Length: 342
Image (cartoon, rainbow, N blue to C red; front, top):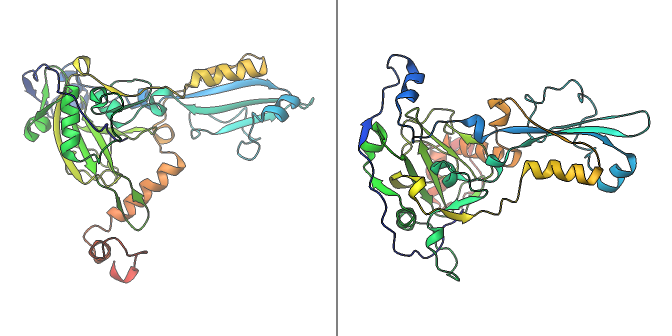
């Protein structure tokens, strides 16, 4: 999500509290001890909270209601597994139905939670939920300001500082945890292409967790603590993340409780509202059930994002090859990969 174009002078913000060395993960007690030793302000990873999923169950849909409202997508939903499928193990948006002898239906669907759908990388990095996308510098843009500028690192840094963040040295962010607040990293990219797709100008954010490692989130997608190759992230500046963010904008200390955080907070999606709509529309009790977390399916990207993620991985694997060099030497005009250059 792009940042606003103009910033007001930054208000005074508290300075980073004295930091303490991050506990080594090999310490007695392992990872649990590392997390326990982290100051309370440092975010716990909590992928199960950010990637939470729900089942909405509708016990009765009459043939007339199905014809009028098309509640069940017959082309996508399965007529097998309504009673036997494990809701925690099926992918998001999986849906099942069964038909009774009188022609009526029962139906359930698995849906993502609000935190996954209504938040982006900057909200996640700050460990706040606002019901929408947090944008660096948004609260410092004057009313009626000009459209967003290219989110260069210079601009993103200024926007974050205006929000109340403070730059910290790389070594501090990598090797310590602050007594209050926590550390984040910010990245940017210009519009660019590879042979698979193009990216628009954008920014990205990543945060340091109580584990001593880093995690991130895409808009509307799952939170993740691994890079393109499935590796944990001890150093976000050298990590290979999806999206071709090729400009590192710096490490920052943030204290969200004392920051001015703005953005687009319309909360357009609420899983509770969807269940309520079914209830009002169909006039029957509707169950909204929080499901046990399943990292394999609940932490997975949707089909559209998965393709981009996979394409980025394929291209990243070619970094340093003749294909890579030939593509960028041509100014990005090579339309397809040439296997002979691999």
